[in-house]
Length: 194
Image (cartoon, rainbow, N blue to C red; front, side, top):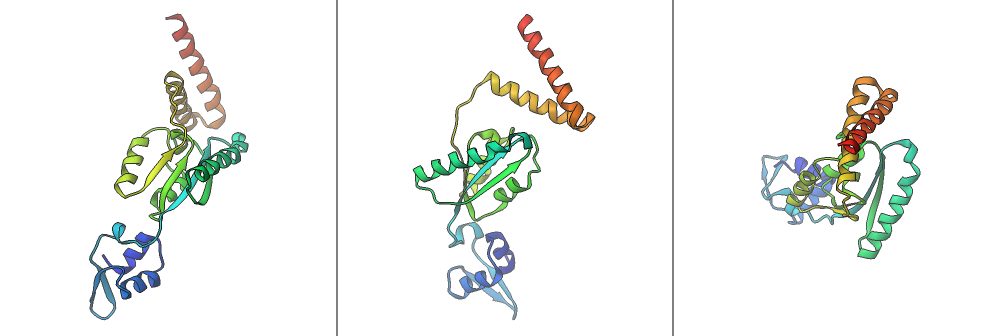
């Protein structure tokens, strides 16, 4: 791997990676006058200490006030566990949306060793186990503070999220809310009768 690629992967400037090479902190070899190739895998070679980041999310601007209270609870949790929080990231967006820029940036940043979230659905509504497994494979983790699950209530919330997401794509935001509420009411009525 070229030294410039190594620096990008580690989230450091090229000059820092060059200094690590010069000081013998990372192993590599010179090829020609201007190229340095790194021999060892980048993820195990980094002398950079992994950071703990708190991630909070709400689904809409109406719930924006909850972002601050989520952040306060998570920072207090981290302090009680002895974690030093380097950053608090707040985002507004659906848990079904897999294109949330702030969350994706945290997942891609190799300097973030631990992401602390309040509930699994703050990270993603579906596929949480995939994210957890991938981070673990790279020596990182996502820590969920509240592991409690409500079973049927969670399933209904997940189903509502999916229906709302598809209705919003088909009908637009305004009509999606009404259509979703109507579908959920029909499902609840069917469940009550039979």
